[in-house]
Image (tube, rainbow over all chains, first blue to last red; front, side):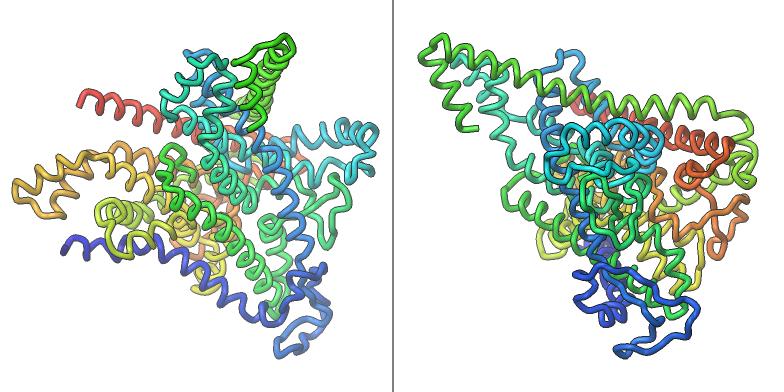
Length: 323
Length: 299
């Protein structure tokens, strides 16, 4: 028992660091939370105020005249880009997983699976580089004008087609970052299914695809749901790739899928420099509030996925260490 | 899905020409779509790898490894050093608590502490790295007055690495057979000795994979470093605080938008180095795991 008491404090650091992060961000952002109130979440104006005027006192807080902090456009940008990413990533991830588990010739399977798992490790800034160099020129000059011309009748797909930076580009790059995560996890779950069910279905005369679709895929439903939620959390907090392809819009709600956006994570990086210009510090504290909101959203998303996994009796998935 | 099940069942039990045709189309279309998704995924990924490796390889020369950055030209020696120092610093800080938590979760499951640590650690994986970075900025860079520094950046990276090391340690220890523990206890060893002298050495290769994984994540991180490490084009002089340091991922992000050829070349070279290192670690970790699997089968 002595050993247990010896390592318990050291082990608690892991859990405590999450609590410390939330508490310190909350304490630091508290003046901003009091000043901004509910306007922070429902208003659409991020305005540092007049940087050269003398600070005034409003609601008991020292601020610059005209300063207002509303991040509705960030919430919209974050949720919409994540929604597009997940919408694309789930069919692609599950389809790739099915192909990797059953479709590929047996001798290629370990290699291709290994390839997909390696892709999950590519840093987000490299995705950003790729998006900036190759994807944006292609989308902005070719695909988006084409889509406006031929699919413009679909709501939110009509012009102007923009420059290539924007909502759909962010969603596409994000989806590419989370597809390997979903594909690797679902593939592992498919391969781990008991072979008896597969053999029974095949013996009844079902083809391999019918077995996969009607017998094995329903069996891994929970893994698909959980990995989708976890990938959603990943996409919500992704910073560098979005920063490089989103267009970093300010106070601007998207009107179609080509509109420039910004997300909470990318906004923190892109705005800290200018927030530091504010001598009252309210801008930096409001950015801390953005970080806090982002932290709470991703904690809720992750917590739901974890509880789903714990209570469904699913063993903690061992293969994907990213989870 | 239910429709498909019913379709298949009817088609198998009483085949007609129409049902057979529909089944054929369903099968062909299904495989076709699966293959298409995989090909698109693989194609996009190959395009990333080709971009980074082709352009990065062209941008690499000796100067990259021997000179520091001068403006937007020169080499990357300062950035390579900074990335190495901060990543290793982060890993060294994360190993003791991470492994301790892994041991605690695997060996002392009763009580409220283990489930709470496990849940908090699992949620910590999902906390965006920029949030950890901003936390480090608020508390250490500003609050403690450390300014942009190796210490603040390493602690931020350590927090990000912690849950990965915790989880791989826990999983590795759970795979150690109970009979070995019982043998240890039968010989009169106490809990600490059994864990430290029997379980940990058995689990060491898998724990090493977790540490390698955390290292590759640290090397690829950008967002938490921007406001903790800052940027510097000089070599690190060994101060833990009050000295900004350069790192490779910053070069990728900041230099690619500069209008100069030399800046682009450095960005590609940095992307090459980071991606190459991350993939190398991935392959190394996999080799350790496969060896491990082989050893287990022999055991």
